[in-house]
Length: 79
Image 1 (cartoon, helix red, strand yellow):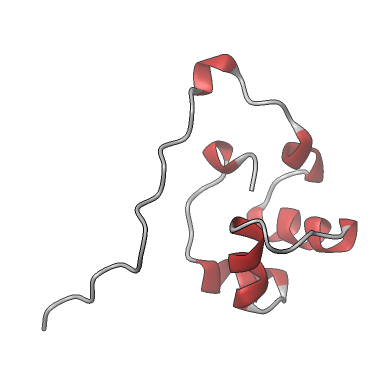
Image 2: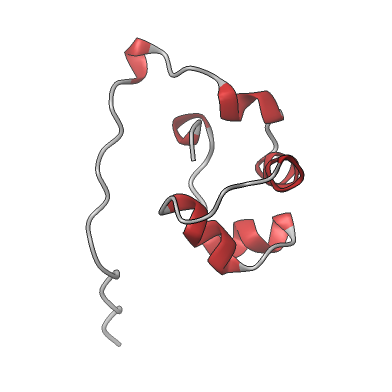
C-alpha cells in the first residue's frame, strides 16, 4: 500500500476491523493479489485517518526506498 511511510504501522487485524473488511483482504492487498475498489480505498483511508488522495501521492525523494519485509511469519513469543 503506498503512503505507508506516512501512515502509522498497525496490525492487519486492527486495520481490517476499522475498515470493516476481512483481514485476508488487507493481506491480499499488501501482497498484490487483490485490487482495491474506490469504495474499499475510501474505507481504508477513513480507518487510517488520511485523505484518500494519499494513496495516489508520489513519494518524496527524501523518503528513500522502503525496507524490504522479512519473509515468513514472526516467531511466537516464548512463555
